[in-house]
Image 1 (spheres, rainbow, N blue to C red):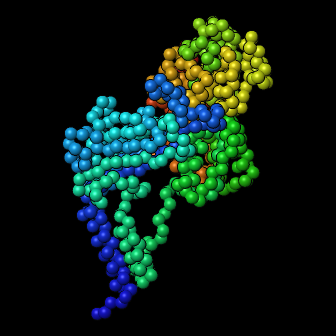
Image 2 (image 1 turned 90 degrees about the horizontal axis):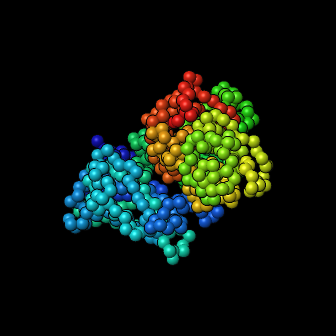
Image 3 (image 1 turned 90 degrees about the vertical axis):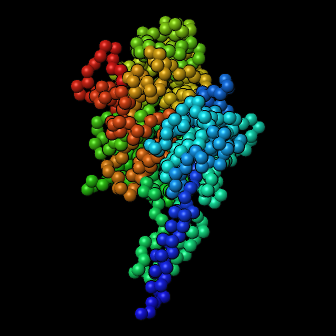
Length: 546
C-alpha cells in the first residue's frame, strides 16, 4: 500500500510537532524562569497642573519630593514545567537574593508585591524578609519557591536620577538564573503566553504550512493566532468624569498598543464632567435612532456615581471605587476638619478660618460647575444632601480677598490651580490629582485621610462608585464591549490601582462596588444632576457615614 506525498506530509505535520513539544516542554523545558514588564509609565497629569507636576509628587524619599516619578509593574513567573525551589537559584547559598531588577536612570522609591499565586508563600514578601529589599536603583527579590505556572507581581515606584537627561528610560534589567534551566538557566523575557523556543517555532510553522498545502482536509486550524478576546477594531469615543480621566487616558493608550486595529482619540475636551458625558452619550444614541434593542458599540461615558432619572437607555457597568478629598490653600492653616465643621463652612456659618482654629483668613469656596460628579458626591455624602451656597462671583479671579465668597470652575485641574492661587480657598478633587499638586493641602475629615481603608471601615465618607455607561447593550464584538472587558482584566485593573482607585472586580460585591464595610442601602446614592436616596435608608444624627 503506497502513501501519497500529501498523506506523508500530513503524518509528519502531526508527529513532528508532538515530538518537538515533548522535547521543548518535557525534556528541555524542565526549569525556566521568566518575567514580563506589564506596565512602565511615568506619572503625570498635564490636564490637572503644570508640565513639571506629577501624581506622586506628594510622596517623599529622604525628605525630598519626587522629581519625575514612574511606575513599573513586573510579573515574575515559572515559565517551565518543573518547580523552582530555593536551591535551584544560581546565587550562592549564603546569598538570600534570587532575582535582581535594575532600573537604569532611575532610583527606587518603594516597592510592593501586588499579586501572587495562591501557592506562593506570603512569608517571602513581609517587611524584613531576607532578600526582599531595595537599594538605590535596584530591587532585590528572595529565592521564592515557584511551582509550575506560579507567579507574583512586583510594583515599583521610581524617580529619575539626577544627571539622567534622556527623555525615555531604558527597560528594566532583570538578572537571575536557575541551575539546569533552559538555555543556560538565565531568566528570560516571556511573551504574553510562554511558548516554545525560536527554533521550534520555525519548525512548527514550516510543518504546518506544508501540511496545509498538501492536505487541507487532514489538518485544520492553520489560521493566524487570534487577537485577545478584549481586542476589537474600530474607533471608540470616551467622555465624562474628569476625576477618572487619568485612568482612561492611560488605559486608552495601552489598549491601542495591544489592539492595533483600535483607535481611541482623546482631546483636551474629551472629559468635561459626568453629566456632560451622559448627555453626550444620550444625544449620540438618539441621533443614531437605534431600534430592535440595538445599542451603540463605539461610545462610553464615565460618571462619578449613578445617573439621574430621564435617560432610560443608558446602562451602567460599575468599574472602580474612587476617593475624593477636600483641599485648601496653605494660608488657611488647617489640615483636619470635623464633619460638622465642613458642613458649617458650606452652610455659610463659618466664614473665616480662625473660627475653626485656623488663620485669620476669609473662607473662599472654589467648586466645580453643576454636572460634576465630584461636586454631587460632596453634596450628598459629605454635606448630607444640602446644596452648595450661591455663587458670589462668576469669575474666581474676582473673589474679594477680604470677604468670603464662592465661585465655580470647569475641571479638576483648574480647580486645584485656583485653590493654590487663592488665599483661604477650599475646594474638592479626586485624590490622585490633589496629591499631584504640591501647592494645596489635603484636608482630613474627623481625623481620617482619604484612604481606601478609611472608606472600608466607614470612617471616611467622601468616596463614589465610578460607573461606565453604554447606550443600550453594545454588540459583544464592538470596541465598547472590548474596552470594558479590558478594564476588568488584569492590565486594566493594574492601571486603575496605579491611579489610586480600587477595581470593582476586587470587592466582595463587584456589581454594587461599595467599600467592604458599607452594606448596600447604608449610604446615600448620588446621581449627577439630582440627589437620589436609596428607599428606606435610615438617617442618623449628624448624617449618614459610609
